[in-house]
Length: 351
Image 1 (tube, rainbow, N blue to C red):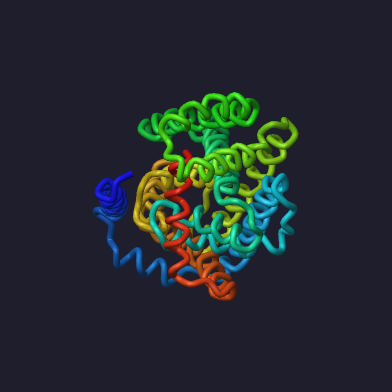
Image 2: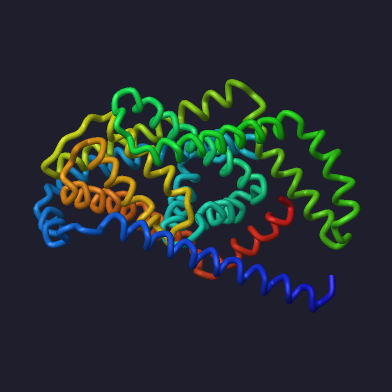
């Protein structure tokens, strides 16, 4: 590859990244506008000031039970590379979720794979494969929550139903695709080899070969029906713990809805956070959450807004603070984020 084409590729990638960031900020602004339009913001602020914040403490505690379950799930999926104790993996997971909350485009997923490589020498391409599988199972559980709630809350807005159906198809196809990759990895390599031989420069061929091989190896947990069941059950427990946090925080405000409605809210808001947005899922978390409470739960819009904003902060602050603490305790630097991004770009070449 010539120097001129390398510079051109670099500029193109950076332009695309910046464009995606601005698109995410624009989407967040639109969602925030939709959420706050026509509200008495002074009343919302008064409701937030009057909330009984003592209920957030058990909510945060149960949320970290969910984070521990996420860590165990990742530990279970990584065991084909090496057994990493949950105690050592927990700080890495916290760093990753803090990265998701601070940086756009879920950069934390790459950051935690980078830190894992630095700490445990597990290839980034392999651990990223397990992260992708996690996201697919999380999406499927969110859809399960929504479908379980449908018979009990029939007045869900039609646009939400359409959105859920579309995502059901996407996540279902993605899971089938990755299971097929895991089950027939030798076929993938047979297809990949002639393509790589023709299009990949010799200077990077060995590195990309290794990354593809590690990526497929990272999908090994999908080869066993028992492993698939274990990952799915753990994912359900993770999101039930998070819904329980929604329930605890609800008690800080003057309203009450059923746990099944909160499961629906959890499912809907987390499906919407798959859309591009500003860091921390600003807007894409808040607008659908408020709408579910108002339209399905019959909650006053001002109370629903105050609750959702406080819930969002209660989800964002503890894990972000703990992740940043672990980040600096591990003697990492902000430059490591750039290194992680460079590693991710190389992984994208393999993809």
